[in-house]
Amino acid sequence: MLDPQTSSTRQPLHPDHVQGGFAFEVQDRVPGELGRTGTITTPHGIIRTPAFIPVATKATVKAVRPEEMSELGTQAVLANAYHLNLQPGTDVLDAAGGLSKFMNWPGPTFTDSGGFQVMSLGVGFKKVIQMDASRVTNDEAISAEHERRAFVDDDGVTFTSHIDGSKHRFTPEISMRLQHEIGADIIFAFDELTTLFNTRDYQEESLERTRLWAERCLSAHRDLTEQRCHKPYQALFGVLQGAQYEDLRRKAAGDLGRMVVDGQEFDGFGIGGALEKENLGTIVRWVSEELPENKPRHLLGISEPEDFFTAIENGADTFDCVQPSRVARTGRVYTPDGYFNIPQAKYKKDFSPIQEGCGCYTCQHYSKAYLHHLFKAKEMLYSTLCTIHNEYFTVKLVDDIRTSITEGRFAEFRDDALDRYKGKT
Image (cartoon, rainbow, N blue to C red; front, top):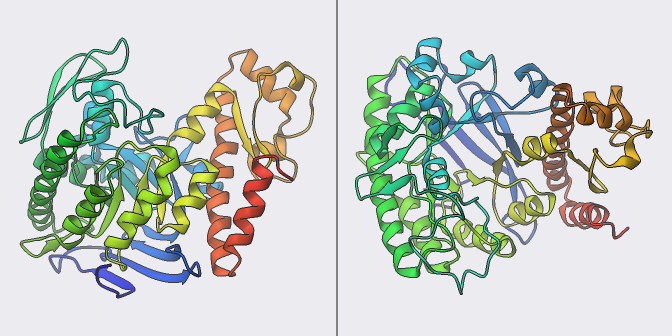
């Protein structure tokens, strides 16, 4: 493990930087495991970790006002450089004073580099691919009935917009410029997303490409930070790939964990790439054992209850995922006793809330019967109310995990919560 220190402060590169810099401090730990609590300090506030970061892809969590996201306990949100570049354009956000001001969100913000969207939209695969990776190895594979829209070379990626078919180009330097214009507190290095379809040889080639892109991101980030010294400092996280291969994951963590370019190093790290669900904890542990102890680790695209517990005890600090809002719009709602689907006929005359005792706005004011009616009537209010509940449930679950670590009862809380969620109690 690199650097045993337990705190890290990234100082502004120029004394004119406003609102301070970026810092991370480790606090409590899970005995015998890599899990910990901590605080991430940003120009727009503090994030207490572990924390779930809801996804506001296009500068909004779909169907929910930013004020409501704050009221339900959200500490930070994550927007996407790919989508904001296409609409409305990152120059618009820059002129508005950055993402926080543009969307009226006062707290910390993240932006994904756009690498995941460029490649996932380009081949049509989701982040977690449920397949036997040992039997499927095709570097040119794309999802069924999907036309390839992204083409990678050593300099960057050329892709076709999913909106209007226009051609675009992302390179590490372009991604850094776009994210600086968006103005998020935490931004991510541009990387190549591989899938579990790709061969071992391609994974090695891609890992080296992502390493070289990471160096270019650090260089571009430093230049942009100096040019925009009147803006708050933006922390840059490196992204770790390597699929399901231990040596590649550890190599990625070691390479980026030690990387310094012109005095600039990564402020934290994102664990990315497609992976098999059953290997999630193992992969997180591999990289956590190699990464600096004094920097935060963000697991990209995870939100299922069992995944939180597994990832946290193996060293992950923060998470983001569209799942809570996405499934809410299709009828699924989460509770400590598992999830269920509101559109089912049995809820037509059920006048109880989604979850008894839940503190969210929806459960405090509305019944399953009313939500069932809204869904069947195709009323937009349905999406708002059920998204509020799902986001509240997810944010609170990770908050409760954090509390259990602080109080020294993580293992007990994990076992009780998962037994209840899976219907074993």
